Image (cartoon, rainbow, N blue to C red; front, side, top):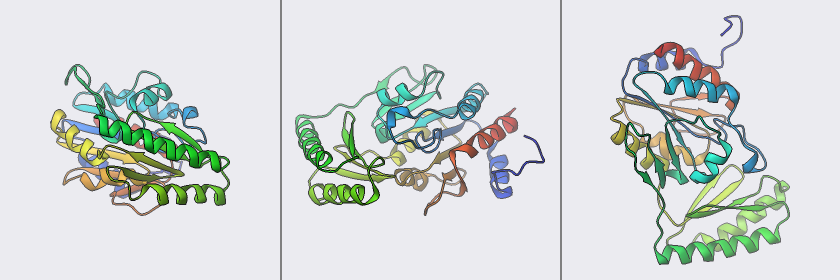
Length: 264
C-alpha cells in the first residue's frame, strides 16, 4: 500500500492483527453481503469485491491459515454469487449448511427438516407472500429452512409497514425464529446462529485464533461467541460487540492484504 494514502485500518487494529498474525491455525471467517460484497438491491446481483476475493485466495494459500465464508445465504445462493475460487470452508444459512475442504473433512452438512418444520416453513412462506403482494417494492427470497422478506426496493414508509405487518403476524408463531437484518426480515424454522457456526469451526479446524468480519445484526451472534485471543471486526456503523470497526466493504481489501503481508 502507498504510505502516502490514508489507511482504513486504525493503529489499534493494526496492532491487534499483528498480535494474531503468528498464531496457527488462524481461521479468517468472512461474512458475504455487506462485507465481501457491497449491499445491493437484488441479492442475486451481489458479487465479492475483486480485491477482497483475491486477498482471501492468497490467504487460503498460506501455511497455517484457513479461510471461511459464513453467510445467512443458503449455499446454493452463495455459490451462485461467489464464483470459484472461494474461501476453503463454506457455511450457509446462518450455520445450518456447512461444507469443509478435503484436508479437513470430505463430508458436507445439509439442512434436513422434519415434517413439522416443513409445514411451518410452508405456512410462513404463504404469510410472507401475502404481505409482499400487499406492499409494493418488497420481495421474497427462498431458502431451504427460511423465507426472507426484502424491502430494499420499497420506499421507506412502505418497507417499514411491510416489516411491521410481518412481525405482527409471525412474532408469536411457535418454532419460528425471526432474524432482523439490513432491510430484511428472515423467518427461519431452525435455531442455528453464526455464533454456533464459529464455535463449530473452531472445533473442526483446531483454530488457535479466529478473526471474524461481519456487518449485520445477525453477525453479532458471531462477535459474541469469540473468546480471548480472537478478533471481531464490524463493517460499517451501528452498535456492536466487535473489537474493532472498518467503515465499508471497500476497506476490507486493505485488511486482508495486511494479513497476507504479516503471514508472508
